[in-house]
Length: 156
Image (cartoon, rainbow, N blue to C red):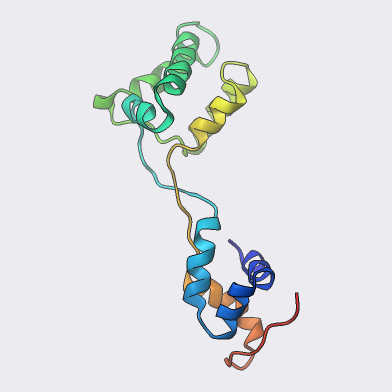
């Protein structure tokens, strides 16, 4: 979350307002962290991990479509074929948050190989929870503490 989003959340929530007014930036950070954008983890996924994360029916449907495309000889099929090899457990896996992988999957969706829902499912692989730090909260509310002292917040 950026500073503007943090300030807006504080002004909109009486409990967060109270926390800021009493200097409890940790409580604000704890409350806002679940709302923060997810962040890439760098995790590599194999086909087994896809089955575990997406469920067997969704993973199998996606993998079948990718395998059919890879065997089609269409433009880009060899790239998909190589990516499928990396999904094998003994090949280490694939980072679904890598910009090149994301671009390839978006292209396959635009070409009708994958559905939008399948793209969404794959795009969620390798994302972990975001967080809001105490320092971020402090920076966001610093304007409300011009002399470093805690003051009542402005009205929303």
